[in-house]
Length: 127
Image 1: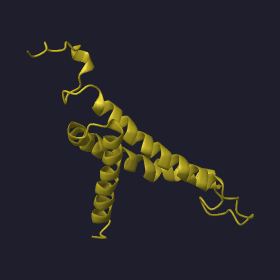
Image 2 (image 1 turned 60 degrees about the horizontal axis):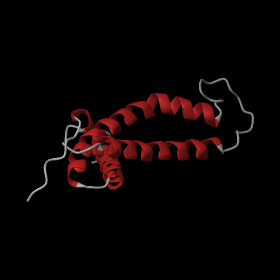
Image 3 (image 1 turned 60 degrees about the vertical axis):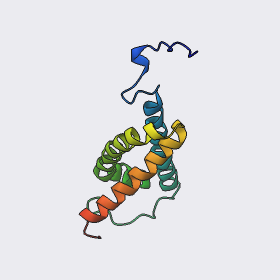
Image 4 (image 1 turned 180 degrees about the vertical axis):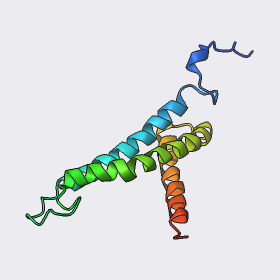
């Protein structure tokens, strides 16, 4: 005899029909991006300040922290948004096929970085 179906609250099931794997996988991928950003920030902020120089030109006397903030706003924010969009799409595809949220999130982050790198190279004229 077969066992009766298990009752599941409808709000506990995401779009793919699995319990929470999509959200957990997306959180793992976002954690990888946060780790990379934190490593970049620590590496940049650990560089000592340059010796005093002529500061007559704009942006010529920024500290490493100020430089990191400017680069993050101008270049990092659009790249992060693009990464998150690609990651959301890739995670939706991967989370259906991979049972582990950790593996699915890691794979999604790696594929999204590769896709965005190829897109950036194509836009930049490197391909």
